[in-house]
Amino acid sequence: MLNVKSEGANLVEEISSSSKRDFIKFYEIALKSCNETIYWLGLLRDGKLTSASKTNPLIEEANEIGKMLGSSLLTLKGKK
Image 1 (tube, one colour):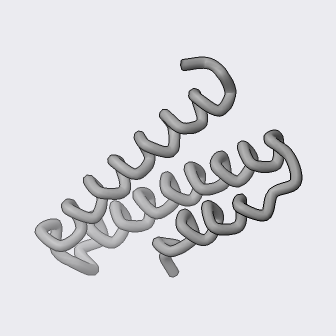
Image 2 (cartoon, rainbow, N blue to C red; image 1 turned 180 degrees about the horizontal axis):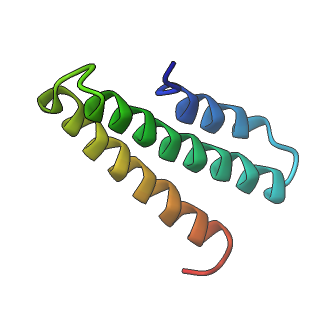
């Protein structure tokens, strides 16, 4: 249901990228997966399928990972 491991898999996959453009694309996919993970965690929490005390720390961590990915993307694209 969740792709919590998807971000890491995309970053590992980017190691074999054939160009800088390809490399950036994997980072973009990882960022999108991170945002999707936050969405699903929020649904689980808001639907009372799990407690906020369990999901909120995961959401916070995913937000931090998203910030790192976003910052890396800006650097890779020369916008930072």
